[in-house]
Image (cartoon, rainbow, N blue to C red; front, side):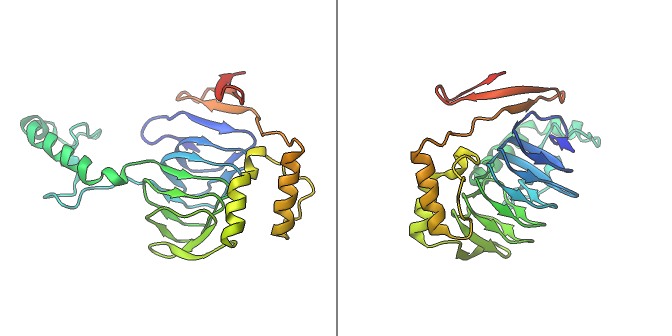
Length: 245
């Protein structure tokens, strides 16, 4: 398991969660989520929410190249190319051109350079590709081997290359209520007595549990820094801030 690509990368893990074999550039992973295994490569990910089930062999956030310039070869326009390859003199002689090319690249790829956001209660099947900048909404399902190139709406089931909406898990009113309740914010505290097989009863019982004082989940988090040193971090719901325990 590796946090970071090319250099170590800090990550925030909310307990409990499980991160299996793979390489990860992820800022934070929520509680009750598991992911990874085999050839999992996840880059440029801002957050993975709670209660997510993410299979192995996921490829997410790979670097993109401009297609409207002379060449797509990044080695020619990135003077900090770490392997050298004898290109330093070329880069030195062509600094102005390289600067223009990089500015044009940033403009042409601006809408695709954001970080990936995977919300809560998301299921992603084996071998999915996720393009950089995509948001996968709460409760969504992504079928195995799909190629996700655009945002996935909450509670949508998507599949294909590119991934398209196949159907929604529930009717619009039910989805609206689920998004309103945000049961995952309470960990398992809002799920006591819930019948998972009856969505109407589940919504009713979750709402009742919340009304009766179900506590927001504020379990400990673990901050793993670039040196792989771990520290416990806690969340203060009153201030909305993290603090070291």
